[in-house]
Amino acid sequence: MDNLTSLLYELIKLPKETEWLEFKRSYADYDEIGEYISALSNSATYHDKNNAYLIWGVDDETHKIVGTDFNFTSAKVGNEELENWLRHLLSDNANFSVHVFEIDNMRVIMLVIYAAVYKTVRFKNIDYIRVGSYKKQLKDYPAIEVQLWQKISGAVIEELYAKQELGFTEALSLLDYSQYFDLTETTMPGSMDEILHYLIEDRIIAKQDNGLYAVTNMGALLFAKNFSSFPGIARKYMRIIQYKGISKIDTIREEEHKKGYASGFEELIKYVEGLLPKSEEINGALRSSKSAYPSLAIRELVANSLIHQDLSLTGAGPTVEIFSNRIEITNPGTLLVEVDRIIDNPPRSRNEMMASLMRRTHLCEERGVGWDRIALSCELHHLPTPRIDVYSDSTKVTLFAQIPYRDLPIKEKKWTCYMHACLKHVNGEQMTNASLRERFDIPDHNKSLVSRLITATIDAGLIKLQDPSTAPRYYCYVPFWG
Image 1 (cartoon, rainbow, N blue to C red):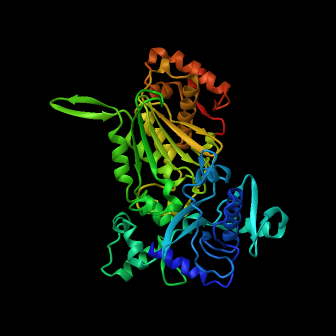
Image 2 (cartoon, one colour):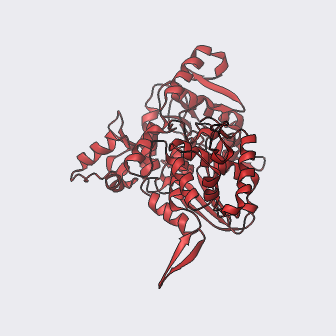
Image 3 (cartoon, rainbow, N blue to C red):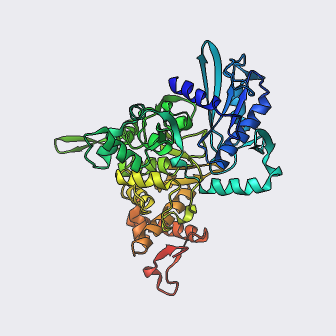
């Protein structure tokens, strides 16, 4: 609250409204609020600001604090709350937080509007921009539009501020910074100045021009004690949902994991694995439990969903959904490579800074072998290769429990066959009928089952004979791109 008050006092010192600042007394046209969010967000990016502000309770001429009768939090459009209505009509990269506080018994409402990233922010499919203190449609200013897109294309979302105007001790109090030193295997310095040096160098904290500090998006995402402390990334926490049976009808439990991805990763994995079905194995006098899913695959898939999500899609975060026969792991954003070439394509990271730091903490890798490890671990457990479904703004990976070959859908059989061929090829080997029988744990006398699957996978254009001129008993198969 003190920081909001201090921020307001700094803003009212400005001689006039700017392209990233709008004052109002109590007037509130709901459509116009949406247009202002679009205009101010785009203008913040255009003018190299992390945030813009729409404030009720300040006179726009004198900049005197006068209080407001407008109540943003209780306002409704029809039966829908104003905030939800706005978020539905704004583009999915629009991000803002609402703050209501009092100064000298006068109520002030401050919308902190985050700069546009990845694309322009739109309201009702129209882009707006501020020209001076006026709100205009962006299409009417083509020169500004070109320059704005140039800035958007060069923006690094991890470096933007998740929370700013903080004292150093306050910034540290929001982060589990000791985990940064533990995970990077760095001895924690004895002085606060040295701690600050490391965190600034790794762009976890940034020093502002006014001498205060900001926690960056990357710092908050990786080391937040609680995502709720950072409005800009508050919805990026991991949700874990366990269902009864194979559908979403009956929910057993739902957990919101709001710790930073790096500092809370081991706790997150432990929680997820604790919900998975297990079977008991007895070796002599020893009894042990075995998970239905390989731990390595779980770790890699969860890490991928965190690191490779599209951070510009602010309304959703990664999700793990556990059913009796499968696990679905979903993250905002589409794949950066073609699904069919996920094995052999060079590695690409959507959030390169965050991926690099996660690699240094040994929680992920950037060598492009993550999917290879996932597919291989499923092979060793005789599980189907996880399915990848790409939607317009999200990616879902489904990890299946063990399914008898006869009950496995033909689509999953062909995908597993193709991935087996890919793994063999990138390791300098070739798939054979025998290797595929071993992959599916099929007895030798059922080799005709595998022969039919190989033919179906060839017909689907996923694999091909390495050398069609060789005798059938020596047939080997490679991916279609091999």
